[in-house]
Length: 150
Image (cartoon, rainbow, N blue to C red; front, side, top):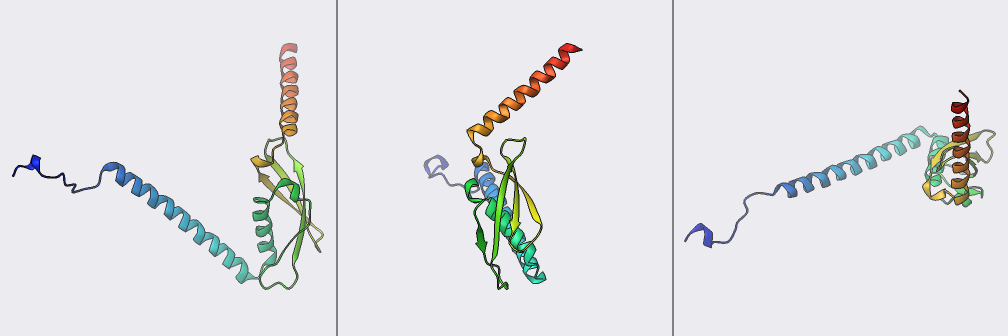
């Protein structure tokens, strides 16, 4: 029999198959290493007994997930090896940058407040967009007048 009449047998992978396999491997390595590092950070915080550090990390995570309107209400969570629950409340403050917010967080039974800087595109309102546009237009007009005066 001749080679042309037999079925086509592949003896190796094509280039696209190898590239896709390497990309999937790279993504899985990144995800596994990130989860490992996060686990080490949590274990380090628990072993040290630094409940304040763990509480701030928990609040930081909560700020990345909750809606803007829910920040000003009281939130409570429990930490391992702590008898008292931790209660916190935040106050959202606007910044000159669209989507970037300064959140001042107060924890119950502590005198100091903590500042968190959060970038959340889903919190942007139409009025904030208009306000930012007006401030940029005003700044542009002032710069233009200054250039014409010179």
